[in-house]
Length: 317
View: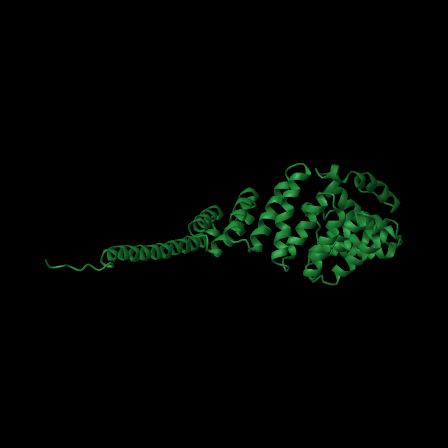
């Protein structure tokens, strides 16, 4: 009887063929997925200027479709930040953290979103939730000064003034040219009674101020207040004038710029040769603030404005 030899590999051929086909399909599928995600990102870019909500939807789809697409993640987080949708930003950033635990920007966005949400909630627990992501962000990227600055804001709301001072200082050390960082550190020192430190911080920040820098208003106002507390009226007057020059019309209530008229008018009222200017600034403050919905916020100043105008030999009416 003739014996037929059957190779032990013969039965394996169909299996190998199937595996090869599966691998080919898998690679092709991944390639198609990445391509589709990239197309969604492009669609989001086109929609972003006119329809931010649509752009967010496209970026969200792309980041879910291809978790390796870092452009999709970054664009989604930045768009949610622009929209100020803090709840969705926290969720999206948390998802990116899991996809890439080394991504410092995701931890920063997560902490920022939780900080913004905490500002609308109550109790230290909400603020505490923002602490770790911000710490993680700076640990992963020591150049991320914004993470340290926001961490300082969080710590201040957790009544950790020492930690806040360290975090503010670290932010300044990391990016000394960012003049936004100096005011809050100086204010914290001043509120704790360390006025000499506060003055040093403000003067250091002023050195980095450039033409048109709106932080000049805050820094010169702070320095004017510190000089006033030192009973150096001439220096206080000079700084309050610089603060007024920096804010121009000084009509942005969100930045508290109206106070420039009161600060300057108050010092001018007690300075020889400045009476006319004092009355003009006090009148402006009275009109913009004391006769508006902002009056309760500036109750003490509004109560003093009339007597100050009288001291200067005039009236705010």
